[in-house]
Length: 379
Image (cartoon, rainbow, N blue to C red; front, side, top):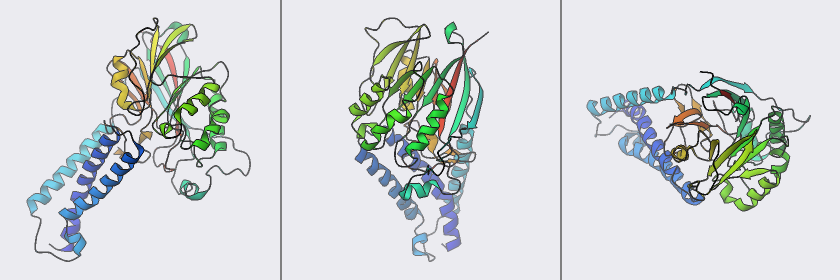
C-alpha cells in the first residue's frame, strides 16, 4: 500500500477510533473514585488510541509501501462510518432547551483588578493561560429565566447564582477570583449554590473567605463538595465554608426557609463520597432543590422529587469544537449533559461550565457563573 493511501486510510480510521476511545474514557471516568486509578485510565486510553491506529495502518510506521493492503470495502466502510458519526454528533449538539427556560443570554464579566496585578499567575500554568485564544481568564455570566407553574408567589423574580468548579490554584490568581465573585455579588442574588470542586490543594482553603464569603449577609448559601475536594481534607474545607455561612448538604438533606418558603435541599457527592439521601424524618417542604456535583446523579435527584437540579463537574468540555461541541466529558452519559438546561423526568437540570479548571486551557468554552431568575408561569 503506498504512502498516500496509508495516509488516506489513517484520516478515515483515526477519527472513528478516537471517538470510540473518548466515549470509553468518558464512561469510565464517570465511575472511577480513586485519583490514581483515574490518571491510569486516562493514560491507558491515550495509549490505546495510538496503538490501535498504528496496528490498522502499519505502513504509517514503516513509511514504506507494504505488501498488505486495505481493500476498498474497508476504506468505504470506514468513510461511511465516520461521516455518519460526524452527522450524529452534530445533530446531538442542538438539543431542545426545555420550554420553561427563556431569555437565555451570555455576557462577559469584566472584573476590576488592581493596576499592575497579574491575573494569570506564574509557572507553566501562567504561560498557558496567555496562549492566543485561551479563554481561561475571560469569565462570562449566563442569564436564564425559568418559568415554573407551581412556583411559590414570594419567589417570583428570585435570583439564583450557580457557581461550580472554581479549582482554586495559582492560575487564575486569588485576586482574579475575588474580583469575579465581587462582580457577582453586585447582582444581589437571593440564593447562591456551590456544586463542588472548590480547591486543588490544601493551601487554597484559605482563599474561601476572601472569595466565596463576599456575598451579602441576607444571601442564602448552600453547597456541596466535588471529587477534587476529596483529595484535600474535605472535612476541613466543609468547616471553612460553614464559617462563611454555607449550608453544606452533601449526602444529607436540610430545610431552609427562603422568603417565607420552606425549601428542601438535597445534596449528592457520589460516587466519591457519601450515600443517597432518602428524606425520611424531614418535615414537609414547599419546594425541593438538588445539588449534585456530577450530572450523572440527575436521575436520582429527579426521583427524589427535586424540581430544580444543579450540577457541574464536566466543565462544558473546556475545549469545544465548532458544530461538534465538546470532546472530553467526564460523565457516563458522555456529552448528553454538557452545559445548559435539560429535562430529566419532571425535573429541570442545570449544568454549568464552571468558573475554574484544573488545567488552565479553555477554547470555545469560557469560565462561567450562571444567574437563574425564577418566574411564575402566568398560563
